Length: 350
Image 1 (tube, rainbow, N blue to C red):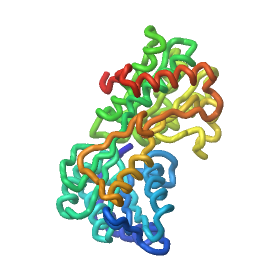
Image 2 (cartoon, rainbow, N blue to C red):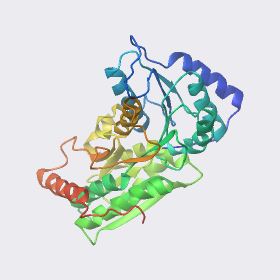
Image 3 (cartoon, rainbow, N blue to C red):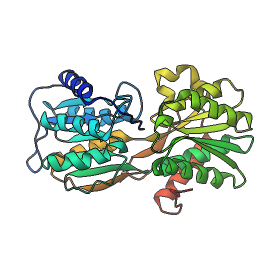
Image 4 (tube, rainbow, N blue to C red):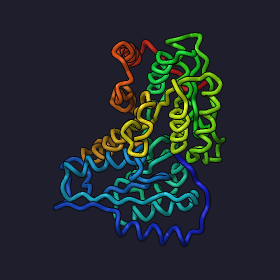
């Protein structure tokens, strides 16, 4: 999720330089393939939060880490985002990685799109992967996108099966086409199970205000309002704000909260909320990142867009915590089969 503001360029350059010095992994000798490109250094430009917070960013790192684990000598260089980020500071971050020899460079989050469009032209021999965006039309840029609506459809179905009130809720961090995909899939999945289900939706901020991705208090307030209004399952696609929904759920008897991106049941920060985390919509960013890196190494890289979905391991749902019973799981697996077969067309818009 994304959340740009503004800050002085000098401070960003200094901070980025210091992180560059510390944020890489080393091994023995660089890897190469006969047909592909020699990869010696992978660059990652993170969205807010970085890799130490479980979720979106960390999954991108895991994809690069998985490549390094099997290819001795490859380094990873990581640069963090700042609350004050602008397109200019994001572009400078990408330039620093490219100038340091990183290739490929993974830009985590759609807010990097404008910056990649500029820096990609400056470094035509460097391959860039942009997670959650496919608008950059350059021969060295790949959009790594996901079928979030498919995974949201599954957790929507789970929510409807678990709900006793016939009311379920959705909290979106920022109203953008990407987050609307989550909402559309969730509502469709819930209505597949119960055509009469009531779906309440709210967005914590409106583009270009990205504060909704990092406002747990507002997430808690919104979830509490839904629970007070009879909703008994809430799905949050809201970045750090989702923790607020968990907090609201733990304070209310008989309600559930659904996580997003990674399996939130296992987040250390969610340990006190485990009993109310029904499931998580899994967006396997690591799969997309690793696929892009492997394509470079094998010489099969193609610019444009590659979408990761239920059929190729990019999307899923969690059963951690034991809150998904056998009957519910069987229903969900049947839905997955029908989506893969094209029998169910999941909407991307409300």
